[in-house]
Image (cartoon, rainbow, N blue to C red):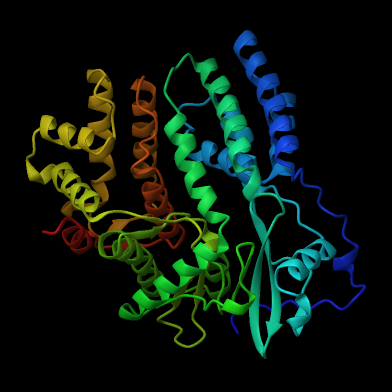
Amino acid sequence: MADSRDPPDSPGSPGDKEKPLKLPAGVASRGLELLKVAARLGSKAVTQGGVDARQLAALVESLSKLKGAAMKIGQTMSVELRDLLPPEVVDALSSLQDQGTALSGAQVREILDREIDSSRLESFSSAPLASASIGQVHAARYQGRDIVLKVQFPGIARSIDSDLAGMGVLLKGFLAITGRRVPVDSFIEEVGSIFKQETDYLLEASFLKEYSQHFTRWPGYRIPEVIDELTTARVLAMTRERGLKPLDWIKIRQPSADVRNRVAQRFLNLFEIEFFELGLVQTDPNFANFLIDDSVHRDEPVITLLDLGAAKRFERPFIEEYRKLLRLSDPQSGTSDAAVLEQCTKLSLIDPREGPEASMRLLELLRTSARPFQPALQPFDFTDAQYARDTRESAFRLAQACRFSPPPRTILFLHRKLGGLFNLAKALEARLDLRPYWNRIVGA
């Protein structure tokens, strides 16, 4: 196996002696704690014109303890709203990416006994392989197979609406510091919608099965097999797959440039398959959601998709309108600015009330984003620091110019996935001729 295996714990092992994680599982207690934090920080931010470091540290600590939608929205705010929020707030929320406390082995076994009867397992490791905002993952054996169990934190699903309300108050308080009146309800609703479906492990199991069926058409990808009899709405059982997380694979395997390029192309092809072919996109681009396995063919690694809870469907009419926007945004198309902006409005990328500067900045961002696909830049170097800088600055200027346009709900998570795949290609130090890829996705 390409990955290391943690030995299962025996009764009385250190995993059972961990300090239990205390989660305010009750909806009322979570909502009250969040609203208290929101009111305290929001009111001081508005009256004093900023939030000090101690207040922000307290916020991060509170969100880390609450986990759930509160922590998830905080993480998403640090990425998707970074150009709208005060920099010190973004920095504080970004630290949530590395926060996380685990349930003890005893707590996990209590959940498993309630959901699936843990005595059916041949072995179980109480030390989690991973822990996030919704739950944690444990290794186990079942009927002679290595499996993983994704176990949801108690009370998370019931607390989503109250968490959304509290985070909405907090977000509006932070925005008030900047003097902007950008509506953010649609942002909160979209994050909440995705988060709600992530807490339904039966839904995620159905996505895994659907992906498994579709991806038989495309070699080079692997989807874990769902263990139905051990899966409930709060526990997801899957086969444990071979492989290393992308950054570990790069460091340990030290693959050649050709192999790195091949893997990067496969990651980009994944977006093409999901969005343009299937209309079903796993929108969480966290590197930890992928494994790279070269144990069978060193030069032809297989990519495993681990987490499909954030999969989002896109209807065919929207896909074709998005494809049209890509075609119009290509500088070589000769399309007028007015035609591009009309298509942007059609896709709800910009509020029609915005002024000329916001429109100009949106066009600038579209053309900057399309730069990697220009013929003169092939093969495109994903480590190009100038491109990353220009894209970042264009996005910032657009956010500063907008007064009515929140992050567009229609493509919020779609572009989150695409940006994550570009970051993976950057980590792989890939150099790829992207023109054939561009021609395929725009239908040229």
